[in-house]
Image (cartoon, rainbow, N blue to C red; front, top):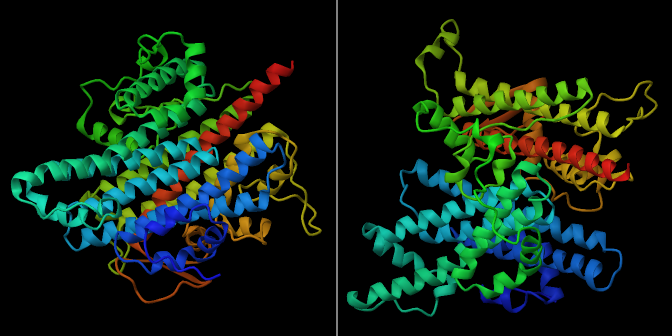
Length: 537
């Protein structure tokens, strides 16, 4: 049966129609590509929502109602495609923002911000379903950023006419009449504002609660009271907003919190362990700017990453991740990983912000050089981040006693690397959810491995341009790499990768976030193993 969704309303009406679901599964890219402007973002969000809903329904039906094994092929196909569609929509939106900026148009776009906000909410749900809680909190923070941009736009009278024009194209507001006298327009705008943004605001709060509800008992003990306190505070926001439906969905978590904490933890931010990291008011400006960048990008190696408000996160800005291991070598390996990451993070920041003319000295004797110092810094950082991934895999191999066997008649086993251990981890009998999450992260960064392992499925577990990311690493280290400000028209091949500077910067940001996530999940996997070993003793 051929289905041609001509209106946006069809998605909601047919979201439970299995034929329609399969149509979206097989035609999502054509549907999104046929749209224009911010509609691409809107349709990416809605298609991802419906496909993700199918996956969650299959999991809940199998685990909670029918008590049967999950249909893994169906679940993976819908879940990974939903994740891919959301990411591709975000990628489209990011490129639209860059293009607008290059054209000198930095005035916020209400529709675009609104759709990007909801798309990041959906992306957060995808990541939460895969137990990728660090990335999920980063995604919901980005949803809140777009909400704040629209709040600022709504309050600015200079953009009111532009704001109204954009609101008319929102499906949710299609029945509103904005052609009214000025004295009545304010009440119409206020109604439209509440209709569009209050729901998004409260859903963002609800998603933060869900993430904190998953991690507050997994984090080191010093943080548990803090996150329980934040959960209670966020619940009070939903109660004040009378969001009974959202509260009802969180009832089991609320019951659990009240059993552990009959009263809200007092002074839940007053944690002695963290007081030594209090930034204070006397922070030098350059340190404060770097601090804000790290916090807003969720690039600190800390469990404070889950603090739901950036203003509070900035009170304590530190890499406080420490592996308390008896094995001296293992402890040294983990310290090496965290310190190398911190160095790469600063390289990224300096490459994006530092325009010091002294770096021209580096090319004083190379008049024909086309690359600048900051580009070289990013290239150095890029390959080092892949080395960090290999080191995390070595830590996993050492901690969990994994043995890599020689392949294809080779005499010696391969060197530990992140793309060598995925199959061993997935086939192991270890019931450690963070190792499986680590596999998902590794698959994103190396899609060729994902394709080899799941050749019968589309490898949607990767970023939309992950294959290109991995190819860039290969060309930087082994062959030719050509950076340019504009498109050169040359196609990348086995000898040379032709990459636009803007795209390379985006790849660096994505890789830095994924490596941070891999480090944190490596730590959680080890902590999980230790806790369960203690219970067995």
